[in-house]
Length: 269
Image 1 (cartoon, rainbow, N blue to C red):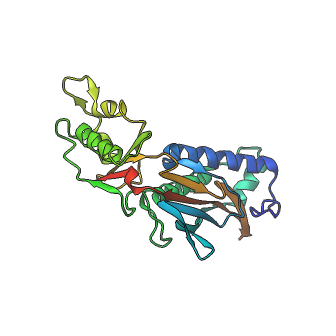
Image 2 (spheres, one colour):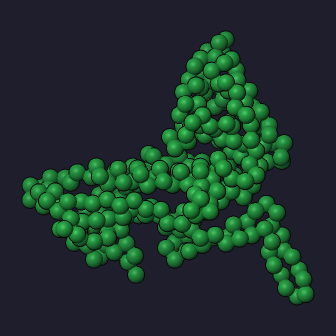
Image 3 (cartoon, rainbow, N blue to C red):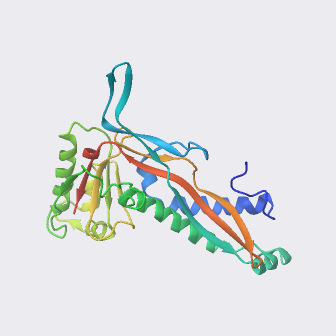
């Protein structure tokens, strides 16, 4: 079954190649979570749910029956963003052999990427999904004034120590709100380096995350045994319908952040 309904659309393969190229390039530039999270999948369009193991998973035996505790099955939520191409624009471009302006496609792809990153960092109450910044059991650290002295460097060192003291080992990622990211661009006296450069020398990745609001940060050990991103359908564009002669499309994906070990995350706020 062609769930993307492209065969029912009036468009040729070249048209869809341009749409796909625009969507993927825009999403790749925008997405942050996928730059440091390991991907589990893509599992395919038929995958409705995924198993979700916590760190206390074990098999329990009783009266000839085995049950796995610490495991649950979670639905892969569908994320989407729609856009419309006007029939007059399409006709004009075909008639005059001009490239079609796909700005509206780029905007929709960017919006979907932000929806995904919001899910990764904040979860979603409607879906009962937790994100990096609000998952139960994550470690907390009070944020000091990053405009003073070596406070940013000291805070990050303390957060890394909090993670390693829990026996968690792996590459460390720092995700920052825009305000905190700019605080790191000042040169630390006597070092000849910005605070961002000093911190980057002891971690794997540092990201300015536009969806993180206020002054917040997260230090994450993003090894797959602690946290990953399950994907059923990767980002793809479907044809919806022709209405009022215009053509409607949907960019969609099924995706779920799985926080298996909350101690691998320190939230600074």
